[in-house]
Length: 141
Image 1 (cartoon, rainbow, N blue to C red):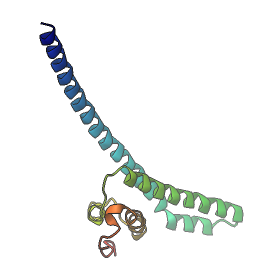
Image 2 (image 1 turned 90 degrees about the horizontal axis):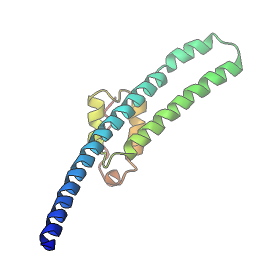
Image 3 (image 1 turned 90 degrees about the vertical axis):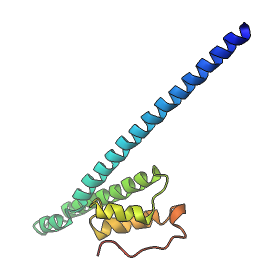
Image 4 (image 1 turned 60 degrees about the vertical axis):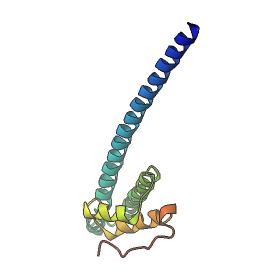
């Protein structure tokens, strides 16, 4: 009798463990999707700020104060550095990321400039799956 009770309890605990594992897996997948979406939104926003370089040039032509010009350019450089950091973080949470994935981002207009593509290429070229891979020509001309 005790053996049947112990077997039934073990079976119930085993089924409960499987159900919990499925719930945890689904939650992790959902959270990863939200996380990637937020990173791509941050990349897009940061890139919009970086893209204002021509406007910054026009603005500082009207300014005579060297300190203000230096401040504006240092803020622009900070935003550029932030973009690189976000790309690096995005790639760090991806299991694999190849030049084919980069091509998809270019085709979907997530990456729209040579500057962005160069950053992505530099960072993905350091990943193990790309170390011995053929490096295709730039996707943005």
